[in-house]
Length: 127
Image: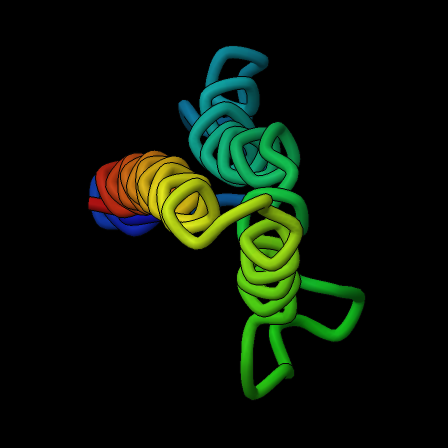
């Protein structure tokens, strides 16, 4: 949004001494330039914000992320423990649980990397 401030500083030197005499801001080109520099940055920011599904990306609800703990991780952990209890013997059950934990860690790592990439994109757009 610094574009708007820079544009205003650039045109602050233009003065109107007579209401009957037109200056360069009263022409069609001047008006188009004004709206391009004032409206385009705002529309660009809105389009960027609306293109991504923030609720799905960050697993938030209508009011944001208000939960103390992440229920998605709790459900996955409970599912892993129930899978481990259904094994035929202790060794098979242990290998299933360990494999599930590795898969879960890989999924969490990929999710974390994706969130970091989204945050990096968002911060680079503002600077």
